[in-house]
Length: 410
Image 1 (cartoon, rainbow, N blue to C red):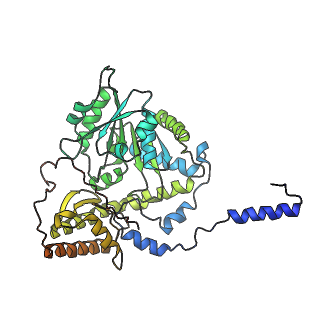
Image 2 (image 1 turned 180 degrees about the horizontal axis):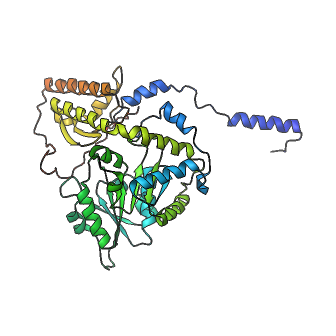
Image 3 (image 1 turned 60 degrees about the vertical axis):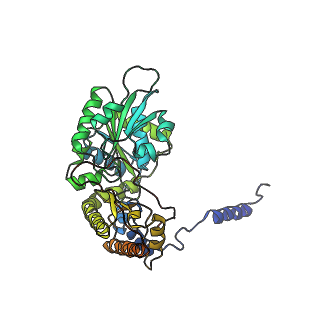
């Protein structure tokens, strides 16, 4: 390419490049329509939309560079979450997967090593093999004998100790609370933690939805997090921030994690507005979580009345057995999306978030009722459906999250 010969030519060339770079991403955006769709989606609690009030609050945030630890709003959020969880320091990151993987990598110094976790754990099944990639560690996935949560007995039976060179010794136990919407009994967590620390094993908590535990039980974050050396707390799920997760631990631990965050490519610059949005969510949305659990219980009760088997239902999630009334998940997804006011269902997991409308729950129950009646008229005879016991024990572990093969997005 020949050089630009004159100033006029250079200005014209710059203007052409500027025209190519310019973009309008607001064209065609229909915010009111999106809000309605999200209020009728049962896909996840990650899909909440930032309110105008949240965005207004975020616009007032500081605008320093977080890589240099120079953003006041980000530092304030990190300090606050560290304080309420009883830890020394915090690190604001982009996602729960990042804070989990940073926490695990920071604990594990040099292989060989293994991480013991529930076989259903997000860190094991849904973080793209991050433990193997980032930490050069193997996972020890354990199926809870009671079908609900790991116990000290489960842990002792699976943990690897000693100096047998054929195996990777367990250096970290990672628990998850909630897991599939179920609450991990705190006394069992304490028992596992006391044992782990007695044999030199660190404890990490994937607390993506620990906020739901606090809301349901009234237990402080300090108590819930105390048994753990590190905790990942997601801010973009039930809490409703547009992005973000906090990793908390000791000063030394977070300093090392910050280094790994930079290595992972996770250092971000002007993060103040994101931290402010998360702070707004903690203040204004946490008090709304209990109501999401109440709405989930309404959904559960309505499904039971129709004859639908319920697999799990404790906090803001309902795992249901659509085939128990003859309905295929793909069929339900298509019918729901084709309603005059569409509903969005992605499979066997129904998630209530703080912007889910009660009308959406009523409409979903009406649809399932109609479809179940259609199946009965076609000759379907409901069989015996294994239900989750209410008072004694839990069913043995089985796959409860069955995704629809039909794309369902709000």
